[in-house]
Amino acid sequence: MATFPDWKEATHETVVHLSRLIQAQTVNPPGNELPAILIIKEILEREGFRSPQDFIIVESAPQRVNLIARLRGDASQRPLLLSGHVDVVPVEREKWSRDPFSGEVINGEVWGRGALDMKGFLAMYLQIFLQAHRTSLPLKRDLILAAIADEEAGFDHGSKFLVTHHRDLIDAEYGLTEGGAFTIPLGKIRLYAIQVAEKGVTWLKMTTKGKPGHGSLPQRDNAVLHLAKAIEQIRRADHLPVHITPTFRAMIAAAAKQARFPTSLLIRSLSLPVVVNLLLRFLDGQPKSILTALTTNTCTPTILQAGQKTNVIPAEAFAHLDCRRLPGQTPADVMREILTLTGDGVQLEQLDTSPGAAFPIDTPLYRLLEQETHKLDPDGIVIPMMMTGATDACVYREAGIIMYGFTPGRLPDGFPVLSLAHGHDERLPISFIESGLPTLWEVVRKFCVSE
Ligand SMILES: [Zn+2]
Image (cartoon, rainbow, N blue to C red; front, side, top):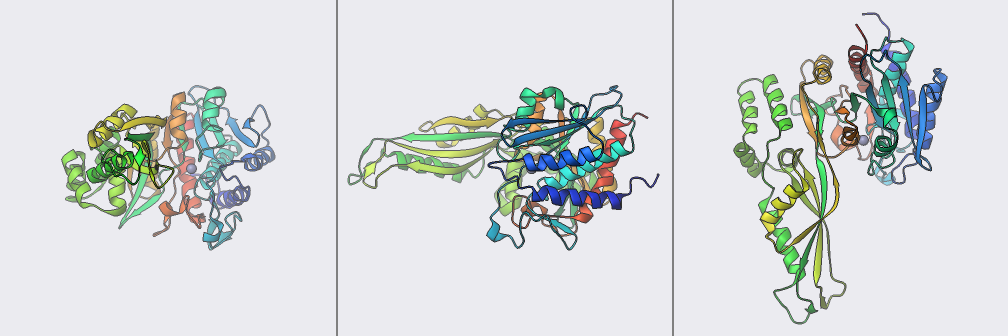
């Protein structure tokens, strides 16, 4: 293969861009994505891109902006979208050992809020986009780069705004966004999980009613006691019923295929609900949380409210439940499962809901992602995975785009990636960028170039 692109040089450039993006403070809420978008605009303009023919900036509210750039192909196939959000979650400055917005490089790592989620990955997408432009890749499909707002607080100013008001700008057959194919250490195993599904959100308000009265005269018919009982019933059940989804089945099959006997047999047995139920009884801590999230609709009480005065028995008591649905499950299914535990004495009301998503994996792009991730780390295990939270992927799905969470790269052994995203001392090793750029490049080249 030709020596171009020079990945050392490309990595250096990505790091410079990432540091600048981290310095642009885009904490959401309130968002304020404009400074980061202006940096990307300047980088594109320096490279010869012009607005509006090559890129467009669309504003959803003051300071809330999205930039969409496009490299044109021969249109024989529909576009590939690379989408990254520029907003970041807030920081607790006093808990950081460095300035969270310095973008400094220390011991080979780029430090700052967003280094992982997801300015680092966006800087890599941008770099591949620039390389595709510089090498004049003969594209059979348009390559779209979207730097967008508001992923961390509800999508309204970013992906939702684009899907609703500017669908032509992001219309694509496939898209890549955050959340997959980086090293997750699992004991001695290095796992690479490509995100192919996301859980749906169902936020519920649970209400119990009772007889109001004076606190000095105790009574059984007390809304607070009814609520406490309902919550206790949820706690005692430990989890809602197990459902083995097609994504979970595919994940198990992929992991089993890459494992040795007898581990492979053990992994395969996870496709039986009875085995999952048994494991959930004996597991503890994070492994249990993860298995619960992967195989059940979850129900987490987060807010309790009742009463105003110590000596008054209130007529009503409330709890908020953060419930997450497996793909294929409806809000009504979740409510039915909860009522089975609590009985009909409680009322459930839907506060908010988002659809979740499950994307097909029998596609040429998924197979390519799998293949290139194996090349990135031949000894790693590559599996399709469901994300337990929600990203822009579930919003783009409404525009018919098949999205995968794919931000590939190899992390150094022991790098605590899962606790650093949204955590303190967020940072990204430069070696990750250097390992991931060629993988991303091969994916874009093989998927978008006419041969
Ligand atoms: Zn993110």
